[in-house]
Image (cartoon, one colour):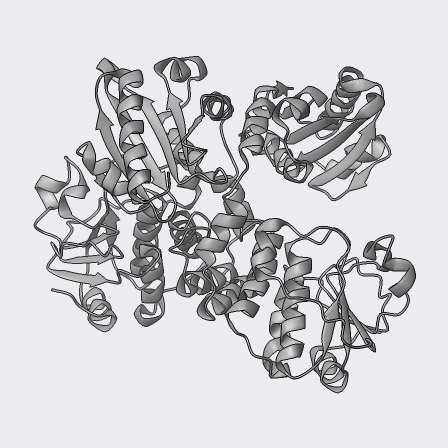
Length: 320
Length: 320
């Protein structure tokens, strides 16, 4: 059942002994929203604990809350969770059909929870949690504001992506007024890279090849590059943004070599090209401007197959 | 004379036949503020022209206004101008001592104009120009909002730098509501690089060497790297941000090889190291976290001299 803000506030006020959950491998918006909801409820006298499935990025731990094992949870609330199975292998079987309230911002939300507070247009779940603070009578102290800022800033690429709307900019303004040292958090989260990553990025850029009059750029990430730099898997996702950033590129491709000839492909496009339609050819999927798929047969063959599909797509759009 | 908003609005309302100026080599905030002030005044029936000294970045020209040579200017207004001589060689001798009103956000402003509207805490001059719109009764249409957004976003590194305050985030929110396609402007201004620049960045990252237990990172840009990639001088400034981004780095150095053994050095530091104190040793200067200086004797000697000074500085702070 979809409920509105008022009903969500009433439900949270009338309940106690909360267990909070979010999606596996929690990103900044997942942990930021979860910690901030935890802090809000504790500030109005509730008992709250939570469980996280997977590691939280180290550069966000400064804003962490601690779980509380001193009581038996009675009310289960999730945040930033589009589908129940995204709880992950460990938590889904236990809690998948027991969530009392889900607070989410994914337009694709499946309404798996008993109650759902959804704003499919919100840039981040943290924007919704922020909007709960005042009606709950919760205390927005500096730490709460930091947790919410992590959510809002990471889900918008620090206010750079297309989902950055007026609401989330106003939320950020309020959080800065509540004491967030946003410049310093931005430095830690968006401006800090490991030495291994920088070496890896140099190799990745060097591997880049242009095709079809510069309309397609392909970066190839080999096992050798991983081994040589020792880069951490968690940092590699930043590479896939690079090929599309080049002037004139409509299709940016990053091909990651895995074991046994498997290649994982990330596709990022600029208007008007639809990334998901290319990914679908190979059994993958995604959004219009960002999609992914897997190919077999090793880097050479996978690249050749992919380029054929991209060429056909560009021709369809009369861009070649 | 320092004046307040009310007096500035009154002055602008009572004047006409404006000439607008800004600093030479105008950046996003300079042109954004100037165009937006031009548009504001024209929207309330004033005649306005302007002069720019130096090239405007191509990716901002979509929001440009056109000068108007059909009248003789009577009232000279400058924006984003900290000192009169920053008008540049061509405009300073003509207009340096004739500016009626200067609208600025540099704390270091020298009050060279007859009247100065200054907010030294504002993130961008465009924030001040935005705040003039309502009291002037000017029309904030989509194009005006785009011009102001260029100013606010570029002076804050797209809301990433330490100067990003609540005021500028709220201004951005209002501009988005006025119709700015901020995601698309961000893509064009902050996410688009030339192929030559990407090749250059790969070589630059590859040249990076770490010193003093990873507390100092040095990138060396050689004449050969310029020649090989054909990178445009205007894109190179982005390189100097890279060394400081590496985890644990306190002093990030970029050394550019010029002609005749001259080396231009950019220093970026993290707290607590003072970049300007290192630059001063070599006759340079700047701010606490960003400074610059010139050294002679070629890349090898310049690097050695600089590293000695950095080592001594790190020891002074008991960081080595």
